[in-house]
Amino acid sequence: MTAKIRKLVVMADETRVEMGQAVTPPTRRAVAMAVIENPFAGKYEQNLDVLTAIGEELGGLLGEKCVQALGIQPGQAQSYGKAAIVGEAGELEHAAAILHPKLGAPLRKAVEKGAALVPSAKKMGGIGAAIDVPLGHKDAAFVRSHFDAIEARVSDAPRANEIVVAVAVTDSGRPLPRVGGLQVSEIKGEDGLR
Amino acid sequence: MSDLIEVRRVQTQVETIYHEFGPEGPVPLIRGAVAAVLKNPYAGRYEPDITPMMEELNSVGLDMAHRLLAAMEVDADQIESYGKGSIVGGAGELEHGALWHVPGGYAMRELLGWKGDRDSYKQGGGGNGPKGLEMGRALSIVPSTKKVGAPGTKLDVPLTHVTASYVRGHFDAIEVYVPGAPKSDELVFVLAMTTGARIHQRVGGLRPDQISKFDGLR
Image: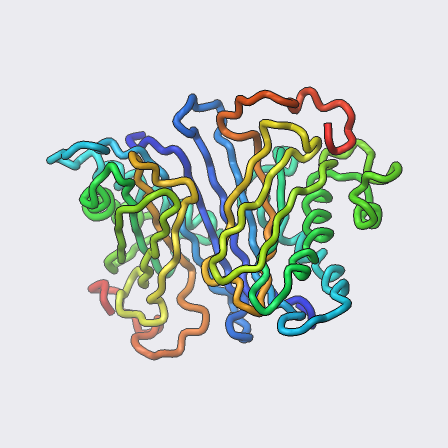
């Protein structure tokens, strides 16, 4: 294992009723977070390959944790997202090295396919900082019913020399989508957009 | 669901803790919490008799306790500490949060092998007379906290050992919140459980192997 993981946190939420309307079936979302040591805390490092390898490892681990928490088959996953919070002794670019080059491929394996871009967010933050992980449909980014976000937060992290890495997966869109746009039934799933 | 019970949302969270900058043990500590967001049927008015809801919360509590164990992927026998709590939305009153004491505590204690019956617990926590003092594991009072709060309010839910409240290594708390809840006319009820002591506990006091009185305290 490349990543030095101090803690894993998995949250799952299920919405059954929204504004008095039954949500059938309930919408379900999961976010899995890893609190890892930042190998480059406190120094400028030109080559961030180590973090990229950590991202590759966590894309699979956290993606699988989400699917497991939802109790679904990988193919039933509908939307996804990713994010990182870098502790104060690190650098925003550390989040980029984890999230962008290699995290996506193993995540897509965990949710089966995933032609669409994995939407992301990143920030520097202190202990208990929260980040809103953007969510988009995994096969067609323009599906409007699946634009959403889920809050990720670990109460005692990141310490200064840590990074919180989050991956979110859902089996549904928003609870009561009704603002039009591209529908799930209209997905072609070829270019990742429509 | 009934006139008094409408569950809008359920959220589980599970932490797997490997270390906190100290030596890593043979197995990680698992801490979990489940929160249910319910409509507060008494929001916006003073209702003298709120106990009917308490009865109906029993099944909600049991369902939540089962969900939490499933999310933690452990057996009931592995649970070593527990806690509970409630957050009341702004159109409610703190007393509505107190509705959770009996059903929340009962749900977890029953799941964890408490041998008393619910009625004796309701009348005094199983501490008076023989009922509830049989050698079940979950003898301790379930520690709790409550507050009135806005959506996203964070609650530190206290945790203590399930058999003896004085076990020092297990004194802990877990932070729980549900983004967006409670709305003003909602209630958030929480159950929390763990598989062990604080990850690097080392301040002495009563140890689990020293539990001898089985009175829920020592």
